[in-house]
Each structure stands twice: as C-alpha cells, then as structure tokens.
Amino acid sequence: NNGTIDGQGEFWWDKFHKKELKYTRGYLIEFVYTTGIVISNITLLNSPSWNVHPVYS
Image (tube, rainbow, N blue to C red; front, side, top):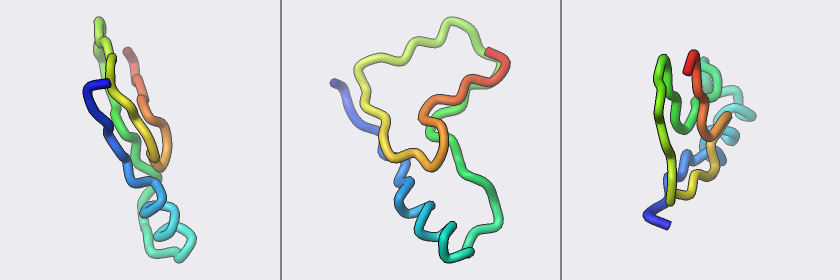
C-alpha cells in the first residue's frame, strides 16, 4: 500500500444532517473522458459518495 486518501465523508454527513450544505455529495476521485487509467496500491475510504467515479471513460 502506497498511501491512503480519506474523503472525510463523516464530516460531510454531519453537515448534511444538520442541513448546513447547499450542494450534493462529492466524489473522492472522478475521471472524465479518460482511457487507460490504472489505480493501484492505494486505499480509498470515507467518501461522501463514490470512491472512484468514471464518467464517459
């Protein structure tokens, strides 16, 4: 494992339940119009939404 990316989803959900947010859940990593992407040797955790969100990829 080369590292961890923490999306701090708990922080987001706390704000959401208190109705303190005016926007939707964020993605931890989003790839748009990509090819040949490789994700390896990392830990992704606590995203408010998707950990990896490939769009048109």
